Image (cartoon, rainbow, N blue to C red; front, side, top):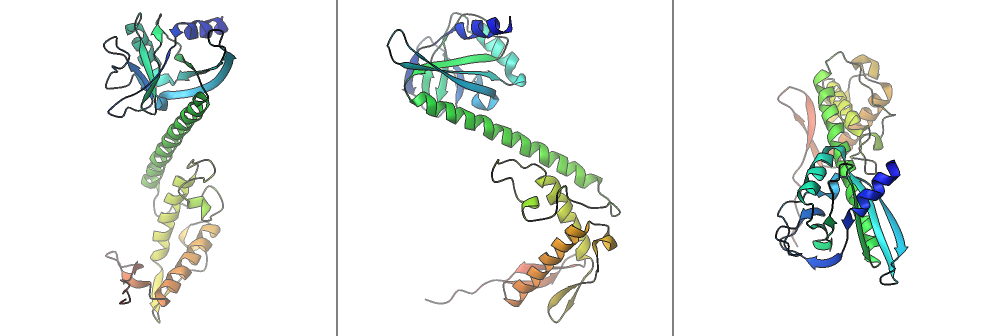
Length: 275
């Protein structure tokens, strides 16, 4: 029964390739065709590729043209299912258009309300493979953006919950990568927002124990346990302060005292050599 439903949904969209460009630029996604003309689209999309959660690419030999035809089959996310269902119901007997790279790729005739969230985009030509990859990238980028947003929301909650007595430890051994902006292979933040939050609070704790001798910063601590932070985090911060001292010696930075009364550094103004 489930397979039949999907096939019915796909069959309810009779697809015709167009390839027309539009101005102004429209995000990739599905649009109402507003006047019956194939070059008249709604200003706002019904759903965009950012609302897609999964797609697959099928291919078959077209009986009509004898050429290879392609079909991108997918589904919108749960938040967009009702929007898609209402839009398809509103469009029964009418065409809707799928836009990619500011061109209308197809203009299916809608024959039924589609409550499953499924859709299909069909056409001929090798550009469909490139379009499939682009839609995949759009979906992935949206997943990354959503993951980053969630990670930083959790990090803000973490910061609000930390007190002076909270033991601070990152979720992985402390390193440059642990507090990097994201995983360079996947683009995901993973636990880095959490780690960055813990790290910055730990640095602020350690700054309270800095003094200055001979224009160099001295950390008056022997271990992380003295300020209730993990030892690997303490060693990383010690290395940070060593770097600060190096930059001070090189004239790239200077030691300052903050309004809170703690020592820190700031960049020095570098004079340019006259040419």
